[in-house]
Length: 276
Figure 1 (cartoon, rainbow, N blue to C red):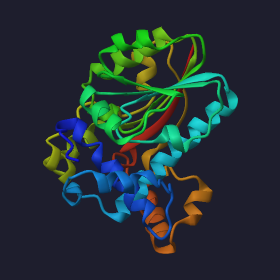
Figure 2: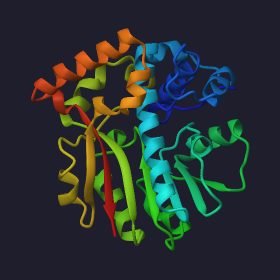
Figure 3: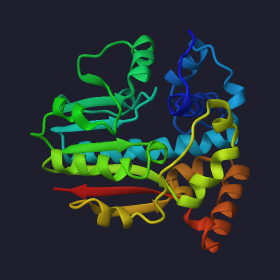
Figure 4: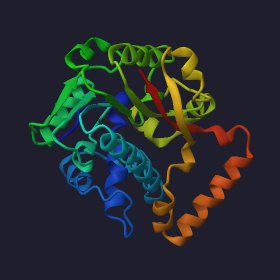
């Protein structure tokens, strides 16, 4: 099938392709068996996205980070709501085990949800919401009686600088308690991506940069930073040891170099916040 997506919506194909590359690698980190099936169904020049197997490892490790935090939250809150913002074609709802007390909502732009519903079978234990995440009227569809986990992987940097904090404020005001886990890029990283193949191919542009996770505590009343890790420290030690020696060595060297550079060392963060 052809995928009629452009701009930011089309960028969802890059992480999908990365998960497919990871699944077919000799040492898969995520082992997402659905991703290769979806890539086979979609008519698209995935090679033009500039995604290579070495890049795919980073995407897979980031996805494992979010999966791991989701499992931790659901273990602590077996009766809860999960809100996956900018879900794209990710099947985290299938990768993460959960009990009958969990309600799951996948939210993305209407054109993305339309594609998603053509590719995924309907499920009785989860809903999709076709809406822009920044036009928060759709929150009225989500009950507030349970703790909520808000997941936003690879989303925030596509929002305008005023949209991101406004969206977070709406979430904090709507739900009585919960957590939000998302990644951010520093401002200079947002500016430096414009020449990358992914953005030349899709026409998408990054806009919102966050230099330090503490900034959002000032911009979003009630949001409290619990923990943050630098973007290149997403791998759990056990996951890191599973990587091939050459790749593990290169990633360790890259991380050490970045850590010594004041600006480049803050390229991005993955952060966990609490509220309520």
